[in-house]
Length: 114
Length: 106
Image 1 (cartoon, each protein chain N blue to C red):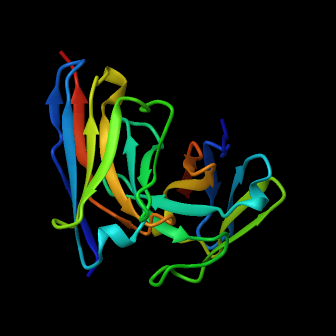
Image 2: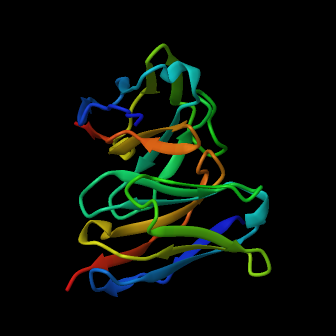
């Protein structure tokens, strides 16, 4: 069964950093487009970033220069390094597979607050 | 930047047909994707590449995309279909979601 499991969320102060992980099973992360999507409390879905199988990366304007998407092929895991965090980054963060976002994790909650 | 617009809410009676639209410039030239999200759950893909259904998605879900508008249609809507629905398109290698539509079945 194809599955994604996110981890690494938590409470962080404004200006702080956090690294999210997304462990995949049942398929190979490096062979797929992999995205991060977030959802602020009570709000809609917001696409954050994508890592192509070839290694290219793209970001939403709201996180460009602050967030970095990467993967560890040996661990079959996707990451999202989040720096200079702001209150507006508070959200549930999901990882998802493929350009169609056909497989989603359960999400991990990031709260940015002093 | 590219934007997708959805109606905030749609209401439908059980057994009737619900249509949820998603509008964006030249959207018909891109693929549209649709997701269903129920409270407290992760989104689920219900339509990909405009009109294709993933395995396990009921046949009552269908999609179309032409001009500036993509449409998700749910025929014979059931109470279990009550959820938030989001459209997605890719523009210049970045993903763009619509604002979401709350479907109420009453």
